[in-house]
Length: 201
Image 1 (cartoon, rainbow, N blue to C red):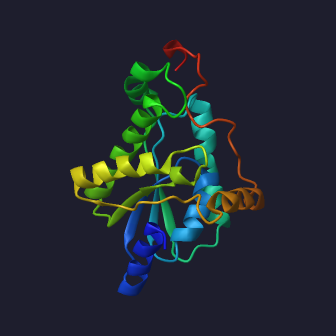
Image 2: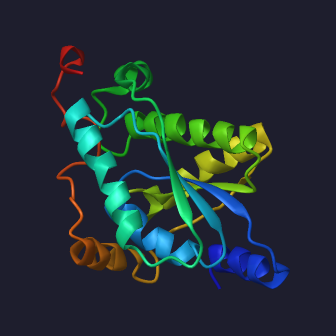
C-alpha cells in the first residue's frame, strides 16, 4: 500500500471529511487529483503560481479552473482561492539560480515558495491538511516535493499530505480528463525557458 493510500484509508475509516488546501499548478494537473481526493476531502484549490510568466499565460491558465469545476463530477464541493499575482516574488527567489538546469535549485526555490504560501494559508484558514498537484507530473520529483512539504508541515504545524499523484495512472487520467473537458494544456511549466533575462519578467 502506498503511503498516500494508507493516509486516505485512515481518513475514510474516521468518518470525517477534513478540509484540505490544495495548491494547484494548472487545471489539467488538478483534474485527476480532484477526482481522486474529492470523495474524502472538502477541497479548496489555491492558485498561487507567481512563477508563471508572462502574466497573460498565468491568467489564461487560471481561467481554466472555473471550467474544470463546472464540468468535473466531484463527491464533495470544491472551491477556489486565487492569490494575487506578483512575479517579482518568484524573481527574487529564482534569480540566484537562474542558470541551473531544469530540476535544480531554481525549481527547488520555486516549489518552496509555493508550498510555504500554501502551508501558511492552510494554517491561517484552519485547514486540516495542505497538499500540491505538482506530484502528478512525470517531470517533477515527488520525493523532493514531499521533503519540502514536510519542512513546512513542521514549521507551520499543519499536516502535509504526502503524495505521488502520478502513480496508478494519475498522470494518464489527467490527460484523459483534460481532453474530456477541453482544458488548455500549457507548453511549459511556468518560468520562461532558459536564456531569458530578468528584464523580461
